[in-house]
Structure formats: structure tokens, C-alpha cells
Length: 106
Image (cartoon, rainbow, N blue to C red; front, side, top):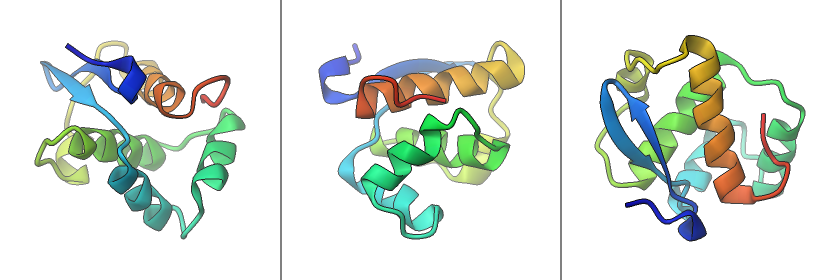
């Protein structure tokens, strides 16, 4: 059972129901991936509503690793999700909303 108060979400990825959470370590991983931006810059980056496929892979991968999965971004690249590209964006948006709250979504 996921706990949204802790920033956790559930998503069907690769045919399995998985938990994702952007822990402090996962956020630090994303800061590195996006050029050393701080957490506020990360939130602002995604408020624009623009996200690349690479961004989605990084966010989903960090969320899975934050929840304790041993998964690489390469593994995430091969996971399917219902709804195709829109489905991936929905997972990212839900995770960012659970993490940052409010309107900080793609």
C-alpha cells in the first residue's frame, strides 16, 4: 500500500504494479542528471509542462530506485505502460505532484 503523505505513488510499469518515491537520494540523483540544479530548480523545470522522453526515464528510474528497486535507466527504457507516451507522462506527473505538491506537474 502506497503512502501519498510520504510521496509514494503506485504505477503499472512493465506489467507489474510498482511503488515509486522520490526520496532525498533520488532527488539528488535527479539534480546530478539535470546539471546540478537544486530541488527548487527541479520543480520549476517541470512546471513548464515540457518533458523529454529522457527526462521521463530519469524521473521514473529515480522514483523506482527511491522505493528500493534495483533498476537501471536502461531497464526503465524497456518498460511498457498503458497509454503509451501519455501513460509515461501521467506517471511522471503523479510522482512530481506527490513529491512537490500543488501544481508542480508536467
